[in-house]
Image (tube, rainbow, N blue to C red; front, side, top):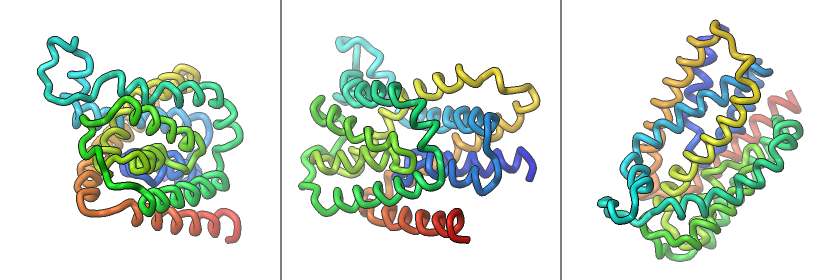
Length: 266
């Protein structure tokens, strides 16, 4: 299979799964194993195309990000989500992620651990749907700093590949009285600084392994991931207006079962 076709396939997988509660990391590990696209080049490529997914959120929520950068007195944007909310939601997981980074990359990036994460994350989402209370926060701009902090703590679970950062944060939001849409939007917004820091950290360590011959492949993956992520976010927010997370949980069970069969029984 050509590198460019691999770039399209993995770009689509990244864009579709990065912001849906089904674990992009888990899918990238599984698809990479299926395609035989593994090793240092694959690691650099997978980190790089995440920047395309990040760009889609920056464009969709540009007004909110710009508002957070303005001094309060000059902030004419009507929302109340601030940089403090974002910091409250990301600082704890950034600290723990930094401490565990090498351990996670070394010991948890495998089909087996992904299968465990897929199942555990699905159970969390079903539990959140069953026991969540009536939403008191229907819009991301109504969030409190306290809510942002505790939703952020749920991201600890997503350090396990296959668990899903968006799945854990949206489930956490439901437990804390947020609507599905508000929890999803906060998950998208705090993903930007988290993913930027993680991507820059990884790229600085492995950038010297990228050659000029890889530029075309990387550009294709970046563009495909950006377009696919943009479409998936817009669709997902509309889906949450009338639906629950249950279908994503059942999807995760199916992927876990098929993956277990392919990697360990077949």
